[in-house]
Length: 85
Image (cartoon, rainbow, N blue to C red):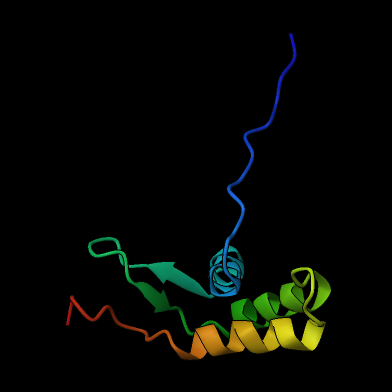
């Protein structure tokens, strides 16, 4: 019997890619009630996200551009959910 792995959906935007990298690294998480992204303020997770961006940037982007995009997205995310406040 042939087994296949479930394929992940392709990220369609650069911002979506950066959010995915930050989530996988544990630098951000989702508000359980409203779904807003929240910054975990974990310096180790942030650094891991930057390393991932540097080592595996999306095609057509330099490592520096990938890190800049991750940093820009991270800077746009707060540490509290706007709807919870």
